[in-house]
View 1: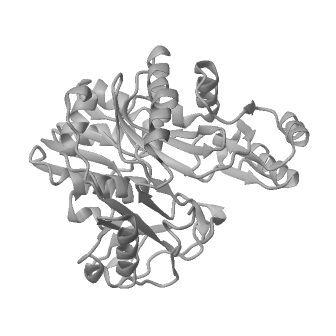
View 2: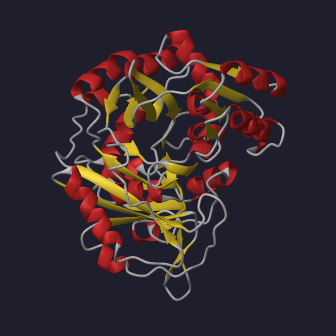
Length: 420
């Protein structure tokens, strides 16, 4: 099969790396890809959000199957457009991807179907939002309704901070149209856990749980990022909690979407908080998380192409998906200043040495004319290791990071330990 993966980050590198191992995949392409993805697939110069251009390229090159990985093209309806052109595609249609594209929609869905989550209210008018914040007090959470690259959530410690966040989103248009509507919700406490699931519209197959580290600095301090590292499996996610989540959250969510006429086919991301009152949904995503994807796919012991086909053909219940009985850790190497202002174009050194013991997934890199890898984004690399125990996987990733350097490189040194 000729397969096209849409996207350009570390998540897409991990997907391409895994698909390249499938005997079913004869030719692999990635649009637009990055410097590291070029090791696994032929990169195509089409923007991930260029739906017409992507469909036209796929048709012109007789692509047999497309994998849409990032949030924006999913929310824009790329899967619908590909399918309408007769090209089988992995990922949710636009009417199901709304579970990530609109936090207001997802909160309403959870309220309607009694799926445990934080109490919240949705606002389209700033003064009402400010009055609500004043009445509720702090700490409190302010969320932009739409997609904001994982940065549209402010956990406000004070009322003034919450009001400032609401004003920046609604009046100052910090996130453009994504912040015209906001969701304000109660502050929850407890460890955050990610559970990704393959879904075929009706059936669900869970991946190993993982734990992202979203804050920029050690000790879970600093601004939110797209993710500074992840581990799998997190020790806090016990079998008892997993059973409760399946009964109260996972199965009800898939059934709710189906009941609403929005059957979900693809990867459904459950962002959970293990509160003293039990597990609660923090957020849904309509695709693999990044960097959670890197650790989870490193533990996959089955053919990823088989799983993608089963999700689209609604035969997931007939597939035996195997996972390694091991642990994984990814440490993100970021550009100095990320997630705020940062510079690009710095040479990256030591990739070969690091790759002896770890998989180095490229998130923001490009190749120059001389064949050198240069930094080309906020998150640059994800150094990923698999080992018999979580401690060994963490140690292995950090040992491998010591080989790599580029100007102003930034990393957290407490991945896997920040929540213990």
